[in-house]
Length: 248
Ligand SMILES: NC(=O)c1ccc[n+]([C@@H]2O[C@H](COP(=O)([O-])OP(=O)(O)OC[C@H]3O[C@@H](n4cnc5c(N)ncnc54)[C@H](O)[C@@H]3O)[C@@H](O)[C@H]2O)c1
Image (cartoon, rainbow, N blue to C red):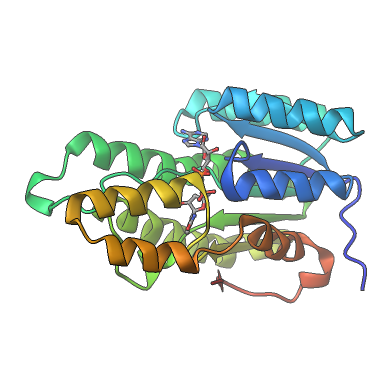
């Protein structure tokens, strides 16, 4: 079976590093046209330049997903450049506040994490779905996490934000299906990325538990393997797929 996403018009947030970077590379290799939104300008521009030199079609936008004006303007510009939006993959996210006690949890960390992970997901979908509803088709992938659905998050804010994204995806699945839009959330397990490594290092430093750190380090999976699952989820071959997808 060949999974062909040639010429698909794709918006990917959080594509400068980690899972998003591997998603960008995989879609680019398969000749999708990509609008990449991130705040890590050096990594995002380098990645885009590198892939464009190899013949890909990618454009990088500096865009903070929690800023309503930046999202509406960025989606408008990307839609014009792409000529429509077939797929939205929202991977932008942060994990802060790992292993901090609830009594001392900093309010500004709460606001940043909820703002980027949950409000950012809402704003991206709000503006992209307007385009997809007119097109009567589209695929939207949001990124929640076992941290918000299954429990045991290292951070009160992160677990809450990802539970929120999961709930948001459930409502969207239900309401956007009638417009021909398929919505999923993916729950990656423990993936070897800057976000995950920073979290386990912080937890090790706060708790002093080096064994738990080394145990988690051993089970981290490759971001490129998560990218392959997302690629399949976005394809027509996955048209009968429903709901949330959990990975290692
Ligand atoms: N790595 C894991 O184990 C794991 C597990 C479950 C879920 N996730 C989720 O997967 C997604 C990708 O994370 P990752 O692990 O690849 O981490 P990562 O830190 O490598 O990638 C996150 C990306 O989001 C970007 N970003 C941060 N704030 C932003 C903002 N305000 N606007 C736009 N972009 C912003 C970052 O610059 C970065 O490129 C996140 O939503 C994360 O919560 C990761």
